[in-house]
Structure formats: structure tokens, C-alpha cells
Length: 92
Figure 1 (tube, helix red, strand yellow):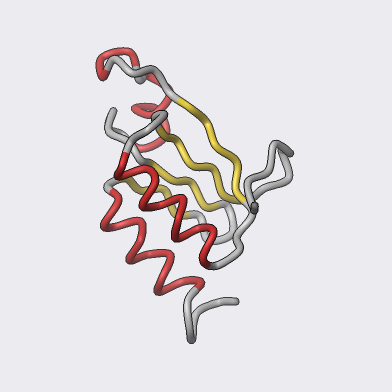
Figure 2 (cartoon, one colour):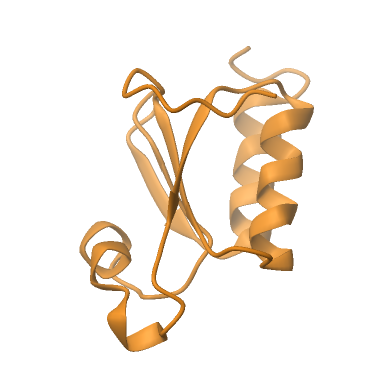
């Protein structure tokens, strides 16, 4: 749908395959028809150094939104952020 493999996407989602929390964020990105780039990370928590570098934690999902300069983790926080930023009355 809105997933892009292009480096042009301003939103990057760090995620795991078949992770229900990650899918919750994917669904919200698709609901708002936002272009985003998926970066699948290592399943082993201790190997997720790329996520630790960008968010300070090794948990997924994590999102980087270059449109607003926001980097965050935790699916509930990300969904809330997307609602506030891109939902009704948001930046869109």
C-alpha cells in the first residue's frame, strides 16, 4: 500500500516480522496513507543495535519521522503520535 522501498520516505519504521505491536503501527500508517520505509530488525533483543542507536532502546516498533524530527518507540505512543500529527486536525 503505502510502504516504500525508496529512501525518499520521511518515516522509517523499525519492526519485526509478525509482531502484533508492529502491525498495529503499520495499520495506522496505512489508515493515514502515509509513505514509510520498513526496516526489519534482528529477532534477538540483544542484537538490535540499530534500534538502540536511533531510539535509545532495543524495543520495537520504533519510528523516525523526519517530517517532525520525532523518534519514538512503544506502539501505543506511536499510534497516539500518528493520530495527533496526521489524523483529523493534524498536519495533513
